Structures are given as structure tokens and as C-alpha cells.
Image (cartoon, rainbow, N blue to C red):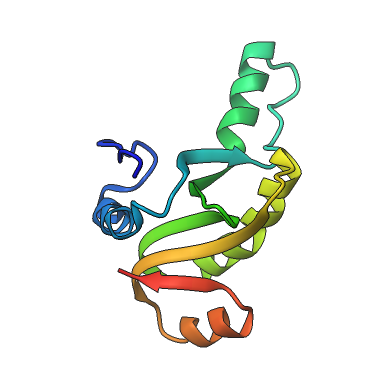
Length: 136
């Protein structure tokens, strides 16, 4: 069982209880966890920016995966939110690709939505696109 962190800097305060419930429920299943994992290319700084500003612009504009959970059989890229809508579906569809491009893992990468509540019409879209979710 890995120790759970006590702070979650990137997670919105309203989403922290959702994350903590999920982590507690699955604590003995994880091999490792990473939080706030940056993927994608980011956006360039305006022309004429200093190298420091260029680096900051790229780092800050990259996509951020809330949690990457490493299991024996696969890697889960996890979106954490109290109330899941269409934005979460876009993230679930994009993050596995961006994670594979950034890290070339040797295991299957699966998206996972962890939330307290689904917006209307979201459940059939998740199911039709074979996107896993867990209500906590």
C-alpha cells in the first residue's frame, strides 16, 4: 500500500474530497501515483519573448492530467471532478494519446473518469465510447 499525499495543489478544492475518496478506496491497488502530469506541446510565447518567458509559456500551457495511476496491468490517466460534463469526455479522449506521446509507456494506457455526479446525457456517451468512470 503506497502512502497517500496530504496536499493536492492542482486539484480544485471542491474536487479534493472526490479524489480522496477514490484514492482511499483503491489505495492497495496502486503501484505508484503521479499528480498534475503535463502532456502535449503547449503554446509558444509571443515573438520577442525571453527564453525564460518562452519556457514558462510552454510549461504553463501544457495539458495537465490530474492523476496517473500505475497498476500491474495498465496505466490509468484519471480525470477528477465533482460534476462531470462534456469537458471531461474531451479530456478522457485526449489524455491517453498525449500521455503515450510524451512517455511511450510499456503498458496499456486507459482513461478513467472519477466523479461524484454525471451531467445529464453523459453516461450513454461514456458507455458508447468505452470510457470508464467511477462514481464516488
